[in-house]
Image (cartoon, rainbow, N blue to C red; front, side, top):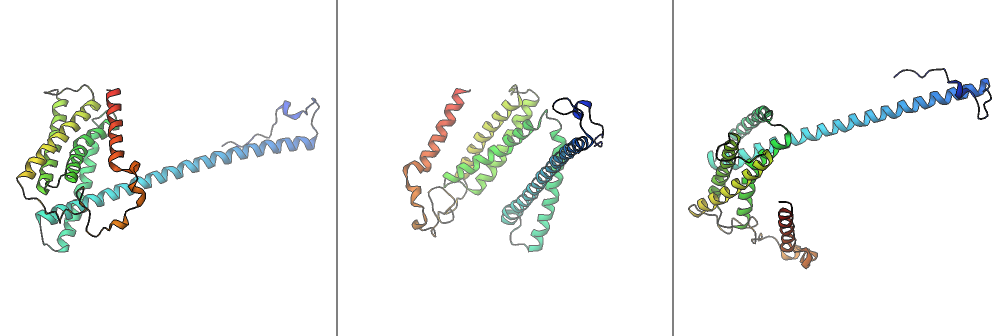
Length: 266
């Protein structure tokens, strides 16, 4: 920033009635001008420091979220898939190595997805496409298994696989204008999610009906309507028994608002 000039304009060297300022008054005027320039510089510096601190905090939060995501993927794959289905009863060292390999593979896959994102006009379309392919079948499996006791683990596995595959197939068919042509990326994402949800539910029900289900004791606290045996009724807050705090009422109001908004702005 350039240093403030010692020269004061002629208008500033005169008093209220046009008289020339004396030597002392002129020095005071120049000192006030320098102080104003200094205050302006200080304020600009504080703004820049604040912006830098905010950017650092945002980058730190994003880095922390990425680390948490890696930990989640590592844990789910190692404990819920490898240990539960593919390699039961192995040593801790084996699962530790499996977790490390999963971490490396996950990071490499995440890096490669950046090249896929380059083919989209904006990041919003890319995120909605990912949500329709992966989140829609996951939500279908979760919501059905939470309310239907007959759902099985194999039903959940094959439904997730079928729902994801169907959403991706619709995405590719729309991209090449084969069978499907939705007109826009956002419309395609909605239809991909709808088809994935329906396929997921059908496969989940069909596979669950021909595979062995878990006992009611194993489902305690996991399925709607089955509270844990160690949960005492006295632990329930009495205020939650009020009619206007009923989950059924609040959920019904939310669904009603959803339907009204969809039919209004469809």
